[in-house]
Length: 593
Image (cartoon, rainbow, N blue to C red; front, side, top):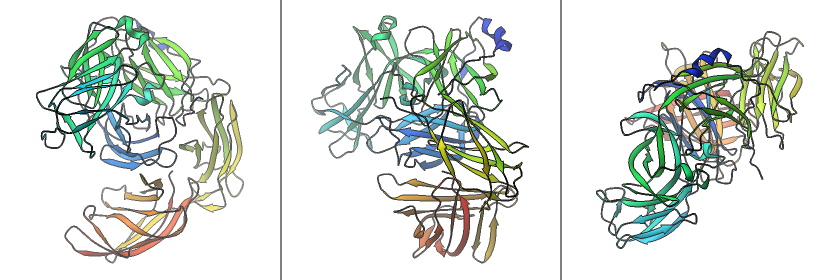
């Protein structure tokens, strides 16, 4: 059975790159890509799946200094994340799984990432005192030397049982873009940025019987044996570099080498996390923007660019942002294949491109829809008076992806989605009139290809007004969009059946800075009185202690995205200096997801 991804992918039929043909003829050696940071503040969202391809809820997500948790659909969204434009990092953590890393080129749009978690399975147990081998079914082997294991925290000698958790990662797998730790981005031994051609990867972690982390003893090593996938054995070199994931950046780094022995690579490693047998390839940055025939950006679409040779697995996998943009490093001086991957993870279009010797932007590429795969959702926003809404937007949700699509001067809106041709997607849509501050009711339906015309969408009948008013120690503050940012969402608590609602707000004007952040946990998604958990307000952002009882009185709980949380609270908290403060609030804030 194929897995239908809620992440959107796209099709390529018309590939207009005539203006770039001169670049395809360049020859020579590109300058090394130097590893220099390029800070960017942006929004990142994504979908996390477990090893079976099902949405993974309660996954802890981090992007820069911002954190969140996936909801019941495996979806997350983080705004105002401070990232590195050339190698932005998202990490995903869930009990029972290896920590996942996703590295991508960030843009000013809403960035999309997709991660498939790798389950942490006990592969075998050996004695730390005597050492020994643990072998996986496919021939992957981990050899620990006698007396070669210590505690990870402090490095104390360890002589008990060593539980070896290991998972082989096949670089030829069709879903490698979702599974691979980080990406194929790496820093070689000269700290030049390269892209990798992989011949096999493995995840390894060591634990004591009590669950404490173990590590290889400093000054010693363990030996890894990794099978080479049959389809690329013929091109496997006699000696190959070993690379490990930098757990701070998510970028692979070159550490040592392995030798080919039959159909396997064997090499020594000094620590455990993720290891990869690869050839480092000089790279250039390739960028492009995808739009449909109507000129509308195709967002969150899955694209791969691979080498045409069978020399290992080397590819760039990414998703277009909310503006249809995607970029990343690709091998230089090589003929490449651009692949389009559908929602069932099948390659549905192939286009030869390259070689490239310098950073290249292909500009806007127009693509034509194919029946049952690409769907254009169109409609028209209508106001309470029956006129077109010229300043408004439609909130459209397809699977787990939510988009706010602006209406044009005639009230029309259009957005492009992709679906697996064997499994049509459902949608919900909500029209909002930004001037009259009115919105309609949530409408639902099933996408039909090539165009789903939702007709007139009424943006009327319910108030679209948002606000957060609060009083801190007798001083009143009022926060109202668009001058102020208001953001609220509900997510599942990791390892629990409970839910957590998060409310975050801030002023956009530098002359009047302010912030109010709070969250609360609830067993059901319904109105009620719930104790406030974390609380931050204006200059009191760290070390606050809520004085119980301090409850949020939630009078309205939104069942659908685009509807509103409504409620109030009144209580006291102590700041980090143990000073007591009085805080009260009333709020009405739209649910983001």
